[in-house]
Length: 279
Image (tube, rainbow, N blue to C red; front, side, top):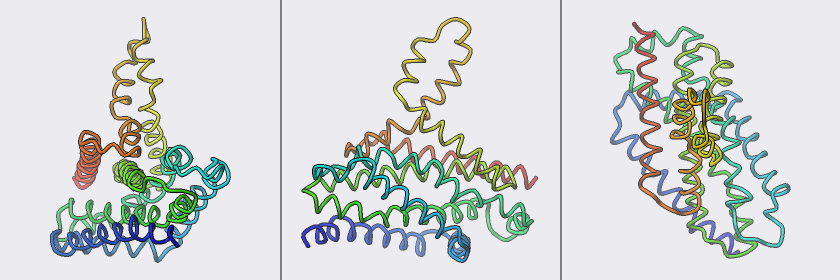
């Protein structure tokens, strides 16, 4: 019962508050055109099997592996970073592109992209509306991960503030991967191509933050120096260091600015790709 009350106070109520703020912004701050696209896109996710399949896959992989293969239940250890959060971005490398691959590829395949862009709305209305709808799907996946939180509170007395920070960090990573997928989806009409290319780029973004890559940059010599600019760019854009800091409860403005800037740049790149196709 204590674990249930903790889950309610530390996670359910904050989640409801965040959701209420989002709904308030959506209905009272964002333009009507964004709301229209958002509702249309969100409905399309849940009127097809795609959202339900991805929910089952994500929750099945994340919770099953954490419960049975990463030692979260061994010795009643009340901690989630090592057995849970450090693995979530690996699942999201595939799940986030799977959610976002249809954002623009489907519109291009069906020939409705041109029709949408001739409507009385700016491209950023459609971009933001579609992105927010896909982001809500990813947010819902993380919210439904509550059994792992209840279990860890039943086993001991964890720092739920740190656990909440882990979910926030994971959501930022998911939104970054989704933003990358939005760009790729705007470039190609094939959902499969959008998925595969996005997975590859997201994998590079995740692995780009590894300490080993920084060491490699320091030790490059001779002809290998020609690859230094590319490797340096990948290293700078690596999301792992920023995720790790936030997931451990270190609320750094630099990390939050990185995620917000990265997402904004990708959405801007999406608008450029759409304008080029429109031209």
